[in-house]
Image 1 (cartoon, rainbow, N blue to C red):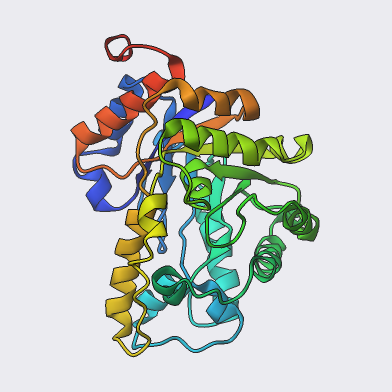
Image 2 (tube, one colour):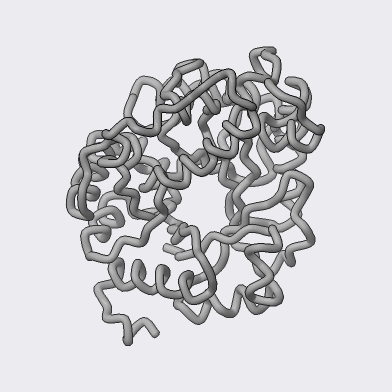
Length: 328
């Protein structure tokens, strides 16, 4: 298993290190094997190929509104339309995804992560369900099939890892939908990626790490072996936001309020739900025994380099049963 850390091509992630070479050296010094790099909507931003192990493809929140022909609220520039819902037409969604895959292939990554989900501002702020997971999964399969159809043998140039979230789409909670999605794909170069924090966000019952791992083991242990074997990657982080979400004091969606104000609040709300905390106890080792993934990414939101170092070492210590000094 290779252990990676998440980073993006955006300046706020790279500037603290000064260069890509120093960013890689920093993470290798912590015992990791490489980087999973989030690419940008307009390209790979000249990240050197030799520092990339894997990529995370760009993600837009509400592409289904565009796929279904809906109008976008508010006034947006073309760049903002791409950022929020993938473009200005269904053709844009397909051609942009095709370009993201082509750009990523220039880095020769082991895989490219694709968020298999959709959400709207109304869902984030008000719990509004717009499409249903079945519709999201079938539409995503149709979109990806069309995007990859032009590549040789109809296979994507990068192995696609489909990632779960807690919104409509892939959640790992419905076996029939998993089978339906898999059978709807016209290509074979793909796998699933489990995001532990996202799966934990599908419940409000977990209060500590043992609760969290019991829940993860219960859901994943209930999957057939052939599905678990398709989970080739893991984004490992802890999210214990259930108590906050049970309070429902965040259900404050006002359709009359300015859309950009609501969008900003939605992004802040999502960051509170999806906490990206490190596991600090050996409970998380159970996950590796169950899944035996090929890749594990320590996925955190970090304040600075020292915060990044601390979170990675904390979680690596938990995974390996070592003391902090031994890791350092």
